[in-house]
Length: 230
Image 1: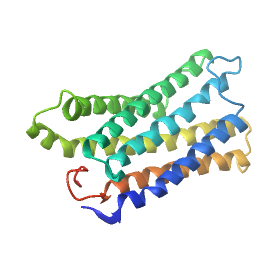
Image 2: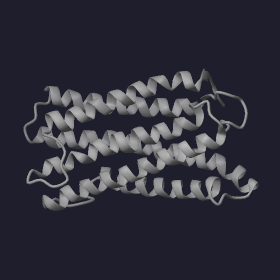
Image 3: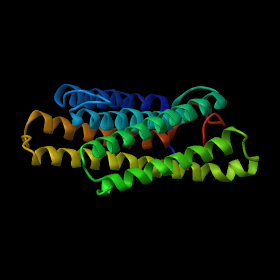
Image 4: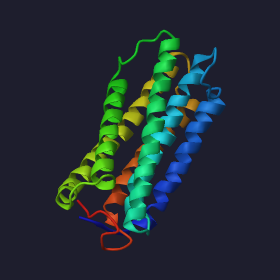
């Protein structure tokens, strides 16, 4: 199954949404929430690292990694390296982002892993890591036999998209959870910050949806330069 729109043309829209989402989360965490810090007496600055890295580092870079294999008009081996490296960076930044949330909780005497958002987050990062390791070993180095690669590819794509969809959904849950906490502490429900957080979540969802659509769009060339449609 494929969408009769060229992937490199369609990819401009999620790129624009990615830029908008990155700016919005930075404005929220730096301008409205006071900034970012790894060590601070104001523990909220430590927490602010979490949404920045999870959106820009994990969701956006992860999405770019997925789209790179379908939208870039490059040789298959080059796209494979770009795909692998972007996913590796996304995984590393995602792990740091999750650690920042634990660090904030620990230094603020807040319990860990009590919410659906946190449970899903741990599961998603573990699945993402397993997916990356499997992809590296089977498709990159040392590389599996041709039959194994052929049989694994559809599952690699499906599992990857499943994990990514979960990540985008969990990001939306995270924005909702944080905004609910802020509003219960006195933040205006119809204020500028509340609107910014909600619109950032909407942009994140739209970006994720367009990443998935790009996967089903028409590749630059109808050969082995790109993985085949599911």
